[in-house]
Length: 494
Image (cartoon, rainbow, N blue to C red; front, top):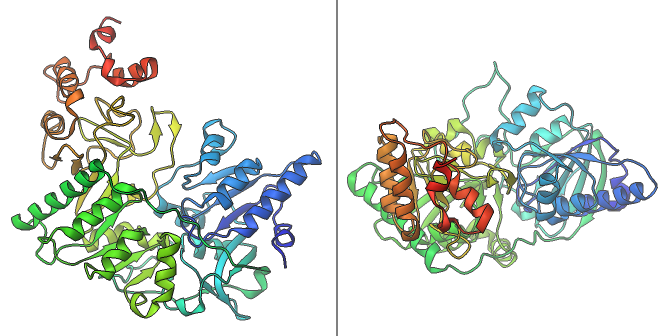
C-alpha cells in the first residue's frame, strides 16, 4: 500500500519504534506520511501526537518532518535534528536523553510501556516474516518483538545481496541472561535476518530512497592537529607496552573530528593495522579498509555518504566479509566493550579543568543532541579519550572551563583529554594534578592565565573550586559573548 495508507495504522497517543541508527536503516516514507496525517488532523481540530523510539538520530525525514508537524509528544533516546532540538528546548517535546545501550532492555523491563507500532526499513522480506534489514539496525529487534503492529518499508535502494551483513541477537532478560558470545570483533552470535510473527505485519510500503547522509567538511588545521595528537598518544602507549603490540579495537564517535582522528591513525606507521568495534561506520573507515589499514569493523550502522554507499554496494565481494552490523544493545554493550579492551575516542562539547565532560548541554540548559553511546564506551574502555578544539566561535568560547555546566562523563571515567594544543593524560592524578595538566597542555593561550588564576582561588582544598566563580566564564559569555572578558573579581565581590 502507499505510505499515506500505511500511516493510518498509527493512532494518536501511540508509541512507535523506528528501525535504523542515524538516517541509515531508518524509514523515510512512512514518517513523512505520519507527519502529513498529523497536520491534517490538527487542521480539523483533532489531537495527534506520538511517542518516538529510535536507535539514535533519525534524519530529517523522521525527526524533522514530525517535529515541524507538531506530531511528537515524547522522544528518546537521541536526536540531532534542528527542528526537533528546538521543540525539545522550548518544552514542546518531552525528551529523555539516554545511554543508547539501555533503551532496548529498559523497554523489555516495562519501564516505558508498550510499543504500539514498529516501522522497519527492509531490503527484503518473505511470507515467513523474515525481514532483511538495510544499512542500520538500532533497537529494531526489541521494537519488532514488542510491537502490536509492524509496517515495513521495502526500500529497493538496498540490494538483497547484502544478506549476511547483519548479526541480530537479543540478550535474555535477567535473571536468565547469559554471556554475549563475542570474543573478537568479527565474532557473530545471532541471525542474518529479523524474524517476526508475519500476522503482525499490517502494511508493506515500497520505496527507493537513499539515506542522504551528508559528507564531512574537509579537514582543517585544528582537526588535523587533534587527529595527529591522538595518533601520537596511542603510538606512545604502544612503545611503553601499555597497549599490546597487536593493538586494540577502536571506537570512534561521529563527525569531522572523529574522521580526522581515524585518518591520522591510518597514516601513523607506528600503529599496526587495526579493527573497530563501534556504533557508526563512517566514510573514513571505508577508505582505510580499502587501504588495508582497517581489517574489520563492527557497528550498528553504515552511516556513509551516498557515493561511498554506492561504492560499497558496487563492491560487496570486497566489503561483505569486512564488517558486520549489530543491534545497539550489542555494539554498545559494556560486557563486550570491557572484554575486547576498546580504545574509545569521543568528542566533548566542553570539559573542565578537573576532567569532567559535558557532551550534551549548551551553557548547561539547551540540549544539543544527547549523550548517545559515549557513556556506554567511556565507562568501560581500556583507555577513554575525549577530544575537542581549544576554542570555538573565533576564540570567544573556551570549551575548557573551571566547571562544566552539565556533567555527562565524570572525572572518574575520563582518562585522556586532547585538543590541538596537546595531550593531558589524567590517569592516576589527583584533582589539582589533573587541573595543572589540562591547563598546561590543552588550554588555548588566550585562556591559560585566566584558568591559572581561577585555580589559585580555591586554596588548600582537595578540588580547588571557587563556588562564586565556577561558572564565571559561562556568565561572561552570556553577558558579552566573549569568555576572554572574564574578571574573577566581579564574582568574588558578590
